[in-house]
Image 1 (cartoon, rainbow, N blue to C red):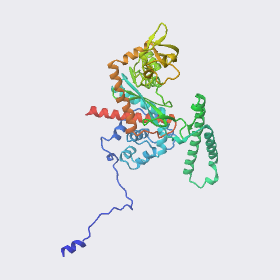
Image 2 (cartoon, rainbow, N blue to C red; image 1 turned 120 degrees about the horizontal axis):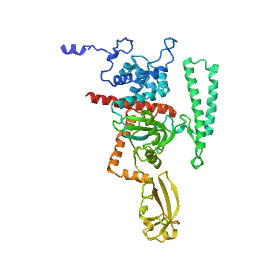
Image 3 (cartoon, rainbow, N blue to C red; image 1 turned 30 degrees about the vertical axis):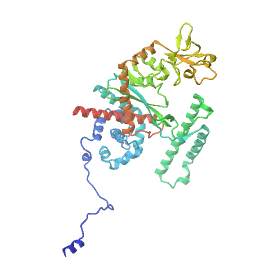
Length: 491
């Protein structure tokens, strides 16, 4: 009987009921713990001078207007969002509705994603000043010294696809179509949509027209600068006209921007950032140096960069400014000259300065064929042997096996005293030891921005807006490092 009662006994269950509305009392201060990163960011931002951000607010108590969001809030929201790998304005606005850290920052206020998106790119001068303020504070604490600065660039994908690239004729057709749609925005047939939807459509169409006008300008500019290889017409993206195809780490090509970063070696703090349209780093060292000097009113004592920056011009520019430069002399600037693999190297050919000729190991002469300047500190002299001397030579298979009608040619590098001094300096153990530090300092910054902050692709279009987002990412990185170093000191 007890077994029967047990089988018919109904358990009491508290079932989930989601078909209801409820009110909850929330203690905002207790949404996050005392050591939470959001609190540290809010505190650091609050210690900075934000007067330039407040000066741009048009509404006031005297003249009225809609109250603006506190700039300290918007700055803190973006810095915390990037620290969590969030770069979408819509996602930040969504997080403000349920994420405890975002709710604590906003005090449970709702922030429209348009407000967030506009603030990210509209306050570029103010943001630049804020970045400088942070560096000044870090300098006072001895965390930035400029005794040694590491320079490097990385490619970050643009907000454009490869399929968005068009030739000039196609861009003109798209532009004409876009202008026509803008003219039709006041069509009475569109009046049945809501004012909010209509405003969104108008904004999108006008932005599309502006991008197409910029694309037409860019493709015409490219046509004037240099001829296209293979007589092919130039193409630019109609999504982001300033984006350029650049080589990625995986070896492929993608629409990208070249982000240049300068990092102080003392604590790995970023002291300079710029976004360029040039895929090559060869002309970026001097601009990077000047940006640091202008921002911090102080010159770096030493700059370290890889082979992409180590050109004759860069070496001379740093020498003229009395800045110690450490770099990697690539194959194109090696003292032995240029040669193909598995061939008799140029150092096997003896140079006679009196006759300006080279003599090969078999005693044959190579005559001068002219020279080519490779910058202010290097001149390449070209020498070539007679075809009959090489075709009958017993060492031809190891010297110039591919030459069927011409003799062996050799390039001899003539360097200035400045270049020879640089080469001698880089041959020292001390210089090589300092050069090897570059990777773990500045390349770490790139890895952090891409992996931790999630900035592998920009969320905005155009170089100037991409620069703003890169600046946000670097500001976030510096604040994170500042917080980490303060915690280490406190411990």
